[in-house]
Length: 117
Image 1 (cartoon, rainbow, N blue to C red):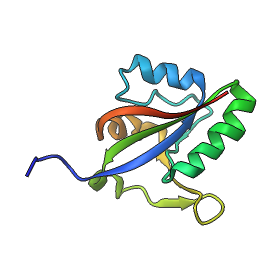
Image 2: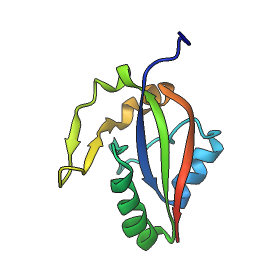
Image 3: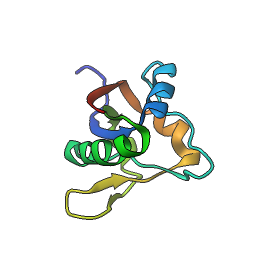
């Protein structure tokens, strides 16, 4: 037994500005939300993250990235899965004021797995 917690893989579509802030945090945390962003929403499948990064972030930010990261699965049970559209459009809604605690439960580094321009 390694003593490591069981983890859940999450994805986050992001633009270049947020990605730079993640880099500044040594790929270990998400930056605080802006006042107009009361929720941090990682998504539960890669395809959904790709669609947002490719179709929304590129249009609005000039580039879109898909990140993948692991979070302590036990901790995530406090956040119900939200269906934001079709059956594969699944998100977790993390209130902005809980983001520091959420970040403390990230296991390993946040990785960029897709880039769109």
